[in-house]
Length: 127
Image (cartoon, rainbow, N blue to C red; front, side):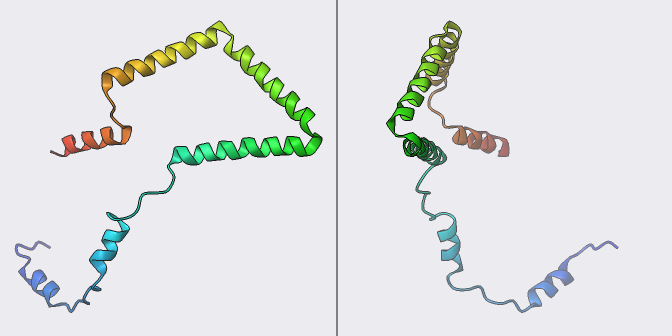
């Protein structure tokens, strides 16, 4: 079937009795979207708090199991592993290369957050 005119359909739709929207519909939509408060913590803050809590719990368990001696030995072992890992020439070279790359990219690309850069490309493609 093919219709050349939608006048009958328009008349039928406009003849329907529709319920009135609530008076505070616009305000509730704006409150839920545009005026919504920013979250208290970002993802990085939550990750950092989690790491701090887990290290604190680890230290408390070490203290509860055997006092200060196992804690001191565990911290000495951790520092020995870190000092061995960071004294390697290859590790230091990779860290220097990564740092130089980060500085190079931040100097020559400017400070453009990743989320905003994605939105900029969407606006250009929509035109």
